[in-house]
Image 1 (cartoon, rainbow, N blue to C red):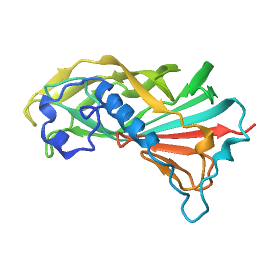
Image 2 (tube, rainbow, N blue to C red):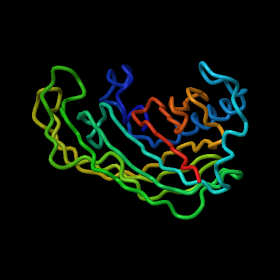
Image 3 (cartoon, helix red, strand yellow):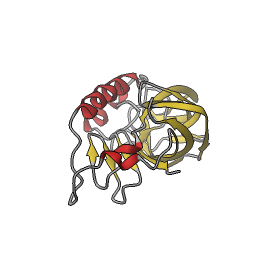
Length: 233
C-alpha cells in the first residue's frame, strides 16, 4: 500500500521501472501522526444540526461489536518486481467482525474474518503505448491472515499479496521478460473510532461519519476504503 503499490500518483507512473516494493510502514507512521493531530482537535459540529452530544454512545456497552468492511479499488502494479511493470485495475474486499473494549480502545478476543477473491482487469504495461503483459496466474491483492491489536485505538492487519508469473515486454515492445511469482507479507493499520463519536455528517480528519450516523468511513487515498459499524446493544 505504498506509492510503489498503487498508481494514484502521476509521479509513480513516470518512474515505474525504478520502483521498489517497500512495506507500508512509512504510510502507517504518517497515518499515526495524522491521527494524533486529528483527535487532538476540537470535535466539529454535525452539518445542519445541533451541537455534538457527548452522550451519543450511551447505548453501547463497554465491549462493542464492530463490523468492518474494507474495499480496495484502483490501478495497481501486479508484477512482483522490475524490470518491466505490469498494471491492472484491481478490486478486493475483506470483512471483519470483532469485539472492541470501548474505554481502553483495544481488541478483545479473536476476530472473525472473510477474504474475498481479488479481481485484476485490463492488464497493461506501466508505460503507455507498450505491448500488453501476460499474467500467468492469479493476482491476490490482500489475503488477511491475522487481525491483532495495533497502536492505541487501532487494529493491525497482517496480510499477503500474491503476485503471479508475469511476462512483461522488455523495452516496451521487445521480447517478453519473465517476472517470477512472489508472495509478499505486509501490514496495515485501521483506526477504530469510539462509537461515542457517531453523529451524522461529522468528519474527523480522514474519518467521516455516514449521513445516517451509524458508521465511520476511512478513506486514506491508497485505494482502500474502510467502513466501520459499531453494533448497538
